[in-house]
Image (cartoon, rainbow, N blue to C red):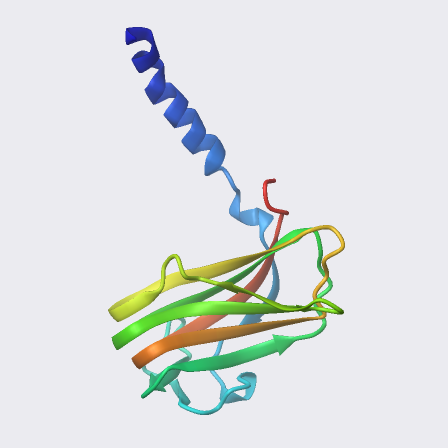
Length: 175
């Protein structure tokens, strides 16, 4: 029993190094949306540009929700990617949110329909500072969406800001 315990820390250390060793440069930016102009945004209801609250100092999209709302930020139809991981990453902050705020990515496939990925593991609530939020969508060989939609969901009421949105391509799941 003693010899097994002696090797446990070494095994855990190796697992952490191997499991967390995903270099950031394996992600390739497909699109960047700074969200400092309303012209970039599809949904215009309950949103405005906040020049005072921003990650990059150029403004962010402020959402004031008096009821649950899905803010459709952008829709892309010229993405040519398969056998990869799509990652929707953004900076988000909240104020007095009652409910949950999270990212949602919708991928549409010809003849199959629309499928979603939601960042339900780390939704924001209450009042928070800027945090990096992301949600992945795992594509297998032959799965190439003809459109990708990026949304911010507010399940409740309060104020949320979103800034510095990226759509990234990474290696397939498990690689």
